[in-house]
Amino acid sequence: MNGTTALDNVLRQAHVVRVSLVNGVGASGEIRVDLSDPAESARLRTALAVESLPGFHCMCLGDVRFEVFDRSGGRLAVVVLHHGATLRWGQWESDAVLADGRLLLAWLNGHGMPGPMQQFEADRLRAQQETEEERNWLAAMPAGLEGLADRILDLSRTGGNPSPELLAELTDQLHLMFPDLVERVLALLNWYGSGSGRCSGYPVHEGVPGELLGRVPIADLLAALADPRAEERHDAGAVRHLLGCKTRPRQKRDIARLPEPLRARLLAQAYRSGDSHNQGRAERWLAPPRV
Image 1 (spheres, helix red, strand yellow):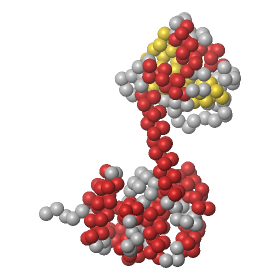
Image 2 (image 1 turned 45 degrees about the vertical axis):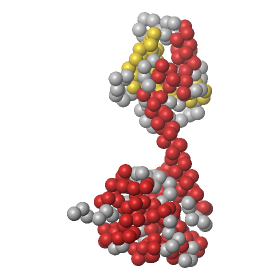
Image 3 (image 1 turned 180 degrees about the vertical axis):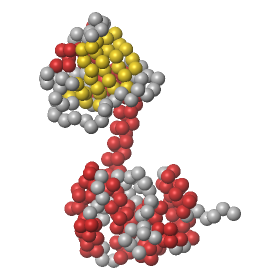
C-alpha cells in the first residue's frame, strides 16, 4: 500500500485518534480527539494529506504518534510524525512528505499539544541562524581558498577532522596569497572570528582556521595582534583561538605571555561577544586575579 492517498482512505473510517508524544514528556503528552464529527475528521485528514513518497527514512524515532481507531475500538493505523514534515506508517515503503506540515502542527496546537509547533519553530530559527553563520564564515574566508570551501564544509556533514593533505593545501595557498606573515595571521584570525564565534560547540568546519592558527608560533600571533591593522574582528578570532579547548600545544604557557594591555583588550572583546561561555572562559584565563 504505497499510494499517497492510502492513509486518507484509512482515515475515512476513523472514529477516534489518540495522539501522544514519542518521548512521553510533558503534561500535554497525550490527547484523544473524537472524529465522529465529519468536520473534525475532514480537518485531520487535510492536515495529514501526503504530497509524495520520495523513498527515504528519517533516522530518528519521530516526535508525535497518531493511533487511529474505528467505531468498535479496533486500531486502524499507527502513524508517526517526524520534524513537522514527514510521516512514517508501516504500510509505506518509505517516509511520506506532508503536503503542509504546518497545518498538522497547527491542528496539534489547537487540540492542546503546542510542543511540536514550538519545537518546529525553534528548529527553524536555529537552522536560519546556522545558515547565516555559515554565510558569514564563507564571506570571511581568505582570498584564494574558495576552491577548497566545499571540502571544508563537508567536514561538518561527515563529522570528520581535516586531513593533513587538506591542511597542507590550505597552508600552501595562504602562503601564496599572503606572503606577508602578519597579513596571513590576520586573515586567519578574521576567518576564525566569524561564523558562530563560539569557543566550543561550533560546526566542525569552523575549526579549520583554528587548526592553522595552532601552528602559528605565539610570537607571530602576538605580532599580528599588535599590528595597527588589527581590529575587533581579529580580536574575536584571537579570543576564540586562545580560549578554546586545547587549541595550542602550549596553550597555558602561550596565554601567560600575553601582555596586560592585550589581555584587557581580549577580555573586553569576549564581553562584547554576548556569549556567556566565551565570557566565562575569558574571565578564567584573562581576568586579573582578585585581591
